[in-house]
Image 1 (tube, rainbow, N blue to C red):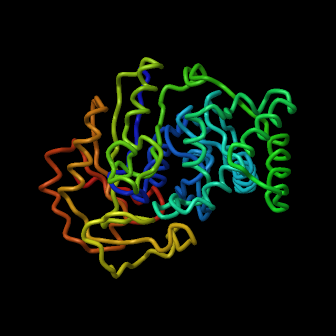
Image 2: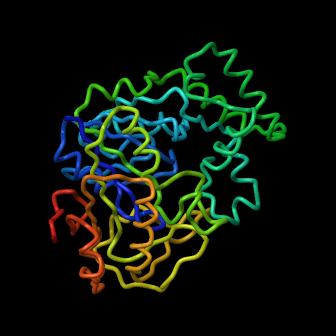
Length: 356
């Protein structure tokens, strides 16, 4: 029987979805990793046998050797995808990436818009064009993955119209970025496929983006992401491929994090150890990674939100970074809600242990 395992962040993102996905991939080496929200803004870090890779345009099983699939709910930035392809290939990872025909394409003009929109920057942009791409595709100026394998003059005409849509003037740097963008498109071996390709795999491992508390429908507006970060999209895909055996893995660090502006309870400076491999560091758009003590009631509220959409046969809690912070987590408050609780004590999936 086919089955699905869905990894969801319970917080504001950066919970450890990458290492959790890698853990599940280590248990299911014949599976395929599926991204069902977000896109190139992800920074899902996996360490394997001394190698480290930050997965953005590939699912987090790629370093371990599993293929990837990006659904129509995701964004694709061809330039960033090609750069990561080269990195992953050098590390011996699996560079097979299947993309739904209706996945949304981020252009240099979308990134330009993200970086030059004051309101967007105030709300907490990561500067990689995600929000602009999603908003543009709600209107008339759409660009999909299927367009990347069509005639080049058709693609270029669409790009001209997108540039006009944003009112982009002559910009030498932007012209160079567009030229590289087109060069990357030409070099990539595009595997555009609908969900039929998933029939070849018994186990589907769905990897979420950000966390439930940043969901576009359920987060505290306006500091939300332009995506459904609950299990909603993954569950809908499972229905389309006729999978009813669904296990949910909800992820949190042993402390709370938020990278970007917006409301966050219990925020304070924490004395962390063993965090040398932290990927979420200062950048000009999101600034420093913010910390706070874990709020068990907020975790349970996020879980209740996700249960609107999920009909899991089993649900587990994964607590990462247990070796970094000695917070007295109230397991008793959480344990009755989950079938199993796992703990992660290091940057590699082999340090996962079942607590309950």
